[in-house]
Structure formats: C-alpha cells, structure tokens
Image 1: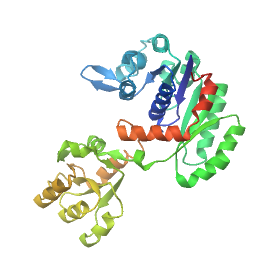
Image 2: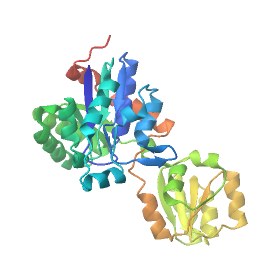
Image 3: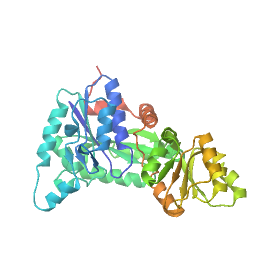
Image 4: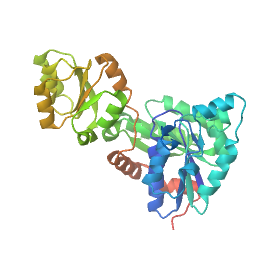
Length: 356
C-alpha cells in the first residue's frame, strides 16, 4: 500500500484541492483509496460537537466509508491545548496510529493532508516531520509560486526532511511567469534532486469568491433572494467617485462586488447598470427604493453592513487568495487543471503504484 503526505509551508495554497484531485484521479485509475487529515488545527463547533470542515467535505465528496473520527483523529481544540498546557498530556500519536491502521485497511493508497505549516502540531509532537516519521509516509510539497523565493522554501524543506520529500507541485503560477518557471525553475529543482510533478497555472475561476462567502465574512443584512448568492465575485471595486465618472469606472471589471456608502444611491444605480454580482452598502443605511427595484430586476444581492467603507474593504479583501473548494464549479475546474498539468504516472512510479 502507498501512503502520500501532502504538505505545505503556508496557508491557502490549494492543499485540500490537491488532495481531492489526487484521490479522484486515483479512483478513476482503479485504486481503492483512503484519506486522512492527521492533525486539525482549525476546527468548527457544531451542535453535534467539533469537526474539521475540509475533512468532512472531502469525505462526503469522495463518498469515503471511514468515519470522520478516523479521517480527522486529532482535533487541536482550545480545550485540548489548554489541557496540555496544564500538564495533562494525551496520547495523540497512539490515536493517530490506530486511525491510520483503520483507514488504510484494504486500501491501495492513502493520501494524508498536512497542516498549514511545517511547525503546526509540534505542541503534541505531531508536526509534519513527526507525522511522516510516525507513519513512514513520503511527502509532496504544494508551493504557491509567486517568485523565486518559493525555491528557497522548497530547498529548506528538502534539507530538513531529506529523501522523505519525493517531489513538489508548483501552484497558482501567473501566466507571465510560466515560461521562466518551466525553463529555469524546474530544471534547477530537478538538478537538486527534487522532482516537479506539476505546474498549475493561476485560474480566474478559482481566484474568485462566492457572494455567500462574502456575506459570511462581512456579516450584516442580506436584501435579496438567497439563490442569488451563488454568484462568484472576481474582484472588488470601491464606489467613492463622482456620479459622472462612475459608469465608465464600473464597466472596467465584470463579476465584481461594489462597496460603497449606503447613502450613495447614484453610485449604486450606476454599478447595477454594469456586471455587478453584489452590492455592499456601508454605514448600516438601507438603500433607496429605486436601488432595491433595480437590484431585484438584475437579481443582485445587497449586503448592508455597519462598518465604514475602509474597514469593509479590508475585511472583504482578506478573502481573496483564500481559495476554498467547497463549490462544485471550482472543484471541477481544479481537477481539470490537475489532469492537464500534473504527472500522475511519475507520481505513481515514485510511490510504487501500478495501474491495473
């Protein structure tokens, strides 16, 4: 049986999506697969207890039989951390090992999703290197490529874990950088003994956020039908100019969210004449009836928030770059990119997996 640990050194590099892409392809190639998130540092409280949302989503998406308690066996809740700090140790390594044995039973391959950084989990002796040592799992590093500084990080990880790093995937590569990455970065990494399994380009479909995510982030009051909130926002625009310049300004970007003062009906109406997927009105001011009528005609949701425009923009911008894949369209698109730009045959060879 093959085991693969999918690691990263920073947040929001697409690690969960890579896990789904790997598992989906392995399933299509005839392998019986399992999935685990050995250590969860971000947990969600529900009526039934606590869980890791990404692990639960992947379990459901791939129709995995293992219970969630085995898929995500170590949940580092604030309570668990406080107990450790009080000198009440828990045998998390034992729990992880037992869960792994259960999940991996009768499987051809198990994909392990790592923590956000190499250090997370060290408090319970389950950092990335400790987990890979415990489970004897080779690892692939998912790295966002923004500049050659990504190479420094990759080399540092190799120096730290040695042969346990079997390769890397460079993700979110901007189009102008692609030739340089292909002609310079890849040969350099390969010469240093680091196979490059894939080069995934940045894709605008993946960079956007849903209106639902925007509402969740900003809070406030929604005006409009909930089904309108499935739209994707590709960018933000701030409405703070004079009315005469607003229409040409708003036409510059499609599928946007416009953030403006609740008292600026002129800008709100101008935005609704262009490709706008959400209006965010600040100052806790309800829009004029003309705006409400036009928004309903265009099926554009309006979000009324109490904060001022600068605070609202800052909170909204923090969502961009956090690529989440709990949307079918995004997930399907990323799987397409994996199929087109990832060398599965080379990975299978490295893991000793043979397609039946």
